[in-house]
Image (cartoon, rainbow, N blue to C red; front, top):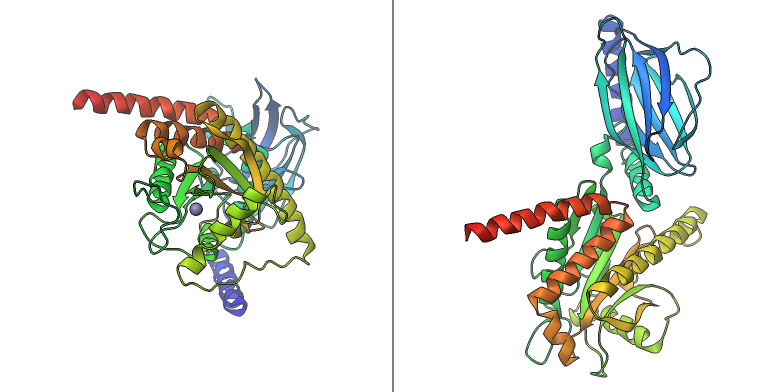
Length: 407
Ligand SMILES: [Zn+2]
């Protein structure tokens, strides 16, 4: 309710004003000097201050900018200070009576990966240090989105809240078992187990939050899966399946993205089968209707499509070295579960339960581990976090070794 928010905002403003009257003016922090350095691909910004600030840092996109708000700051920086590295230009000034703002124009998408304050020592002023690091375009877009979303609730976000959100969607579930193999393996169980493996692989990656649309054998309609992803603030949506094909020689993993026109008849047939999930379960829900007339929604849809294709390529290249892929590994069709215009989305078919070789490998724990690791790598790479993933994997291996030793 907009008016409720308005009233609460007004009363907050009155409350804040009363508070300001009741208290003496806060101590000013003098910003006396600034400097940029750009060692090895990173960029460091140092601001000399007379006291410790509580900076609020967030990013804005189109074009990419980094914003730092500091309360009660007085700028007395002399001369033009040349930017460096990832910062192409910068400016500062008062934002309101009690806040100063610094805006950095970014040459490339970047986030503050480390910030600290060195207190005044031996006559030298204190220093606020911000270390910027280049990140992938999708990760930057995710951070900008969460900053936008939190603008009403809080003035800015902390860097740790800028984590990218991955929503894994195990297909089918509950009343809808999906496909099944000759020996009774069900697609819904395989998909859930595999999603949990991928989530576990990504658990220790900083900068990433992984959530599942379902964590047990419950049924979710296709629209609900999209709604859940939105509610979680998904920056990437991966629906996981292992289907059946009328021809039992069809085999291997493949990745699907959304398209009104299918890449081939087989992809169209697969989408039709996957889209039946609701009908199988007796749920009647219309297609997700998005407002196509909105020019912003249209721009966003194009950006989403580019990111979806980028991620599909990442999955194909990383799964391609780990497991057997379909001869045509990236295809597209009209999958209802991929229809969110604002969330990069792919559908992963791990293989075909109707192919005897596939159905054997799909249930093999060694294959599952290898494939899940490849998918996790692709996700980390998509968000430019593959380095921290390599670190996390080392930790994982050490823990595995420790577990083995203790057994
Ligand atoms: Zn399926």
